[in-house]
Image (tube, rainbow, N blue to C red; front, top):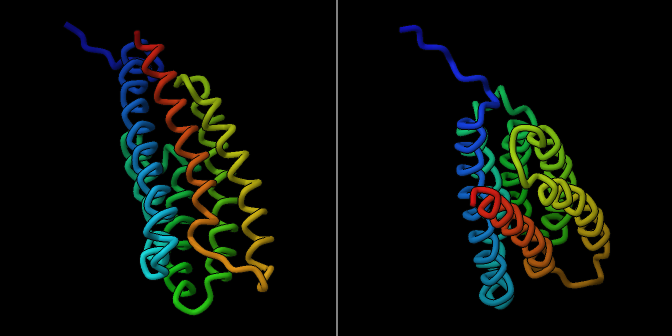
Length: 191
């Protein structure tokens, strides 16, 4: 008996990939909604917790992209996610370096990150378009992230306005909604 490898886009491989992405998007949504709730409540009231949440956001994105890339063929097979891991790790370090001294600078760093990670998320969604369903919310999320990054940069340069982690929370909430939509669409397609 000869055993042959399945083509990368076989029905079984696509179904397994869709199941993974459904769970992944669901977890991303839950973590994002939790982060938003913490940012609007405890993070807004307690600056130290708000600072920790600003560090945790790119750290979580870094970890999530790393896990997804490894599960989806490795970092080399997923260059946009590889770059997103690198960018998110650098941003995490930059936020750590700035958050204690200048919150406006931290929001500016988050703005640069939102722009870059949005472009990379958009690229990942486009790359996955043929191999996985429910990528249109990820593409929209990437585009929205890029616009949000520009908004954060404007807020960061307005030194007269107070800033807090709550500025980033609506952005994270939109991301959570996009991840939820992707997870629901994948769940409905499996049925």
